[in-house]
Length: 384
Ligand SMILES: Nc1ncnc2c1ncn2[C@@H]1O[C@H](COP(=O)(O)OP(=O)(O)O)[C@@H](O)[C@H]1O
Ligand SMILES: [Mg+2]
Image (cartoon, helix red, strand yellow):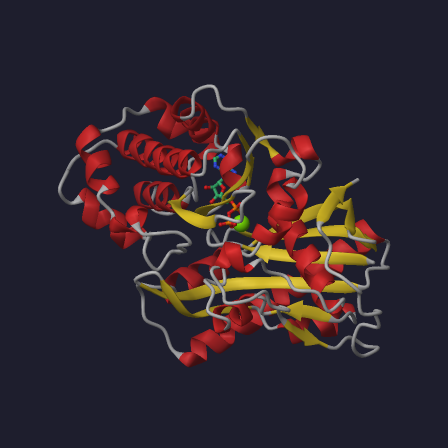
């Protein structure tokens, strides 16, 4: 089955689309990557999102407008991916949507909201769409995240040692083979916020880690940031930009006026490397397989290497899944599982009471996906 996975993460930089040919062969799920495309959000939509996301206040009218605009953007990317990657023969779209709120309170998640109305995707592509993946896991007592953890488990099963999948997006999350999965804290979120503040929004992130490379880590600021209670919460724990946003950073910086921007960025990059490394050590990893836009920041990858001396650190490209599109591929897999009547979570990863069949299905031009219900859940994922 040819499936298009659509994703935009907490960085809300771009809609990533990945297409895959997926199949079930006994207890093995096979994935043949067909390629990926990305479409940056236009600056006006980005600005509208920034203005609506916590800690800002918004209105239901604005939420409705954003739901439509993002739904249309996702639809356009899906049409493009179908044409460019599937020869127009995609059969299903799996859309994560855009997280606008993750309602976490002292380690418990009560709700999570992803927008990007799937009706627009179904209308534009004619294909059935699986969306709204996270809430079912929340309703089952889980964190609703990290949702790619089941895919990571299936994918890394059988690799020797303790391989850990690490995604460096706005937030960093990891999955260990025993099912331990959690958000370690910020990956790029605070770095991006600092760079945007410093450049008045001209630069959205520390391009190629250039600022961090020129700066010096400021010990007292780093110590202050490491006092954040989130890092000491028991796992599984999840977070988002409700916590790690620009205002959070400005509050921390107010105690250290006049720090040069490159030192702030170097310190935030070190903060990510340190908190990720602490998390990686806590699960006794013997290997790290990284993905997400943060892998394109050489300063971050260098610091991560320094924090984890001797530990092999590679990107998911080495195992066949492009780092930039790994999460989009993972959602393609989750959509495929849903239409086959198979659970998309491992309760050990999300903390739920049980595994859940995820998502909501929007019918396509020809109705609901016509797929035979699979007999049993796969135990491994082979990337061809
Ligand atoms: N060339 C680059 N140099 C430095 N950082 C980069 C580069 N490309 C991407 N990034 C970082 O990756 C982030 C986006 O990563 P992504 O995986 O899309 O995260 P999310 O899932 O949160 O959207 C950007 O906000 C930026 O911080
Ligand atoms: Mg992104």
